Amino acid sequence: MARYETTIETAGLQVNRAFAHLSDFTSAQDWDPGVIRADRNDRGAIRVGSTFDLVASFLGREIPLTYEIVELSPNDRVVLRAENESVVSLDELRFTATDDGCAVTYRAQLDGKGWFRIMGPVLQQLFNRIGRTAEEGLAGYLERLADAGRAGTAPVEPVEGSSKR
Image 1 (cartoon, helix red, strand yellow):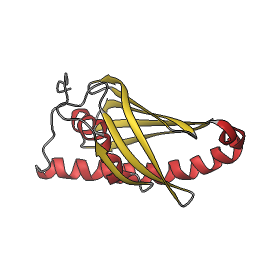
Image 2 (tube, helix red, strand yellow; image 1 turned 30 degrees about the vertical axis):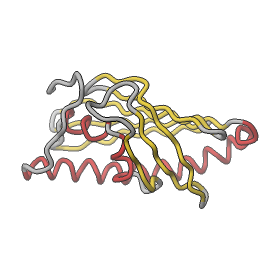
Image 3 (cartoon, helix red, strand yellow; image 1 turned 90 degrees about the horizontal axis):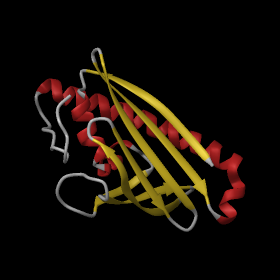
């Protein structure tokens, strides 16, 4: 099992804005350099059961993954799960208001299956590198959202059951 966790604080970014953008996991292609493509499979409000097809780059290969929202608490937390023949991926995003904006905690867990399971220590090292790159991309993305909010651009789409915090 490999894990990565980070918390990014962004001044001037409201929780509801961060949640609306990140709970739509197609945004991963905008902030995670390891994601080549991300498409949503359903329509309407983001909800438990919404699915997203992602293509990730890993060790020079393109890996397709279908992520499903398995838990959703508007403006608080979203948990996504994907599984293929090699891995089970669990990603959690948690949103917290701060005095001057918000904090987003991103937790990712990758569990190997079959022969991939025995690569635990190597997988953790690779996952740390992938996680740091995603963290940098996420921090930049959140800052761009804050800048757009200050400029009055980039409206936020409502999320089913969400309320402003």
